[in-house]
Length: 180
Image (cartoon, rainbow, N blue to C red):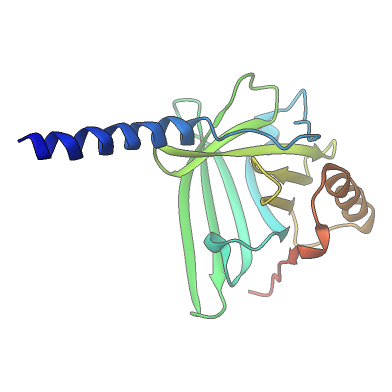
């Protein structure tokens, strides 16, 4: 019984610490500022992923879209879909997003694997909510989104310049193909 307690107590405390830490890992990179006067109703709907950094959840993915819809409890359903061109299969994942504080500030936390949450910060968006620059909690995560598969060059340059000023290495962006 003593051996059991020697194992279960540290493991339980470690798991609790991980849950608490992951729940608060929803920051915003230094120098990035979330959009104020954000209107989630205008943001809802389908977005095409134009560019991103490579990371394991979207490895080998093209034709990536994100669809946002309002849940009855006030949270936002996030439905990501993309085509794995290596495995030749479509992948879909569904998550949930919540505002970190004020719903008029574009700082959200998103979870696809509860209780783990990640930062989702809209740091630039045009007046018509057609193009968005989104960053995670660190300089490892950045997305450029558009309501269509085409991004105007002026918006592209605006977003790249803003990302570089914050410290993102935009040379490492993957420009997503939309051909299916």
